[in-house]
Length: 273
Ligand SMILES: O=c1ccn([C@@H]2O[C@H](COP(=O)(O)O)[C@@H](O)[C@H]2O)c(=O)[nH]1
Image (cartoon, rainbow, N blue to C red):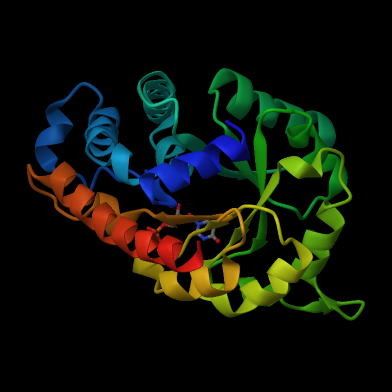
C-alpha cells in the first residue's frame, strides 16, 4: 500500500488509528486457550470487530517470538488474514531490526516477502548500510526509530553530538539514503513537545506514534504539533484497546475503546481540514 492510498483510507474512515496486536496469553480471555491457536483466534476477533475504526494494525513481533514456532505461525496467520480479508489495511511489523547489510536484507525478506507486511520498524543505530536494504523494497515502508516513547530515549536520542541532538541527526541523515521517500519515523506520543522541531526537518513524512493510553501520551498534543497537510500520523494504541475486557465480550469492548479514539481523531481531522 502506498501513502496516497493510506491517506484516502484515513479520510474515508476519519481515523488514523493503528491498533497494536501485542498478544499476551496471560491477558486474553482464558476460554480462548482451548482454541487450537489462541493468539490467532484472539487477533481475528479483535480485527473483525475493529477494522472499520482503524487504518493500520501493528503486531509487535516480540509477543509472537516469545511463544517460539507456535507464536511465529500465529503471526503468519494474522498477516495472511489481514492481507486477504482487509487488504485496505496498512500493516506494520514492529520488529525493530537492523544489522550489517547482508543480514538486513534477510530481515527485509522475512517481513516483506515471506510475511508480506507493508512496513517494518528498524533501529537507526547501525546507519545507512543497515537501513538501505529495507528501502530497496520499492513498494514497502521502513519505519525508523527517531524519538521513542520510553524514558530511556533521553539516554542517547536527545543528547547533542557535534552540537545537534542525535534524533535530529537520524532524521536529517536518513533523508540522504537511497529511496528515503519510503521512510516513516517512530516518534513517541510522550514526546509531543518535540514534534514541532521534528516537522521542521521532515515536514512530509508519516509518523508512527505509539504511547497514547497506557504510556500517558496525549492525542490532541500529537495532532497539534505533528499533523501535516496529508495527516501524516498513525497513532498506535495496543493494551488500551485489546485488553479492554477479559470476558466473552472482549472484542466488542476493544471496539468501544477504538471508537473512543476514532471519534477524537475525527474531531482533529475536522479541525485541521
Ligand atoms: O517508541 C516506541 C516504539 C515502539 N513502541 C511499541 O508500541 C506499542 C505500544 O503499546 P501500548 O500498549 O499502547 O503502550 C508496543 O508494542 C511498544 O513496544 C512503543 O511503545 N514506543
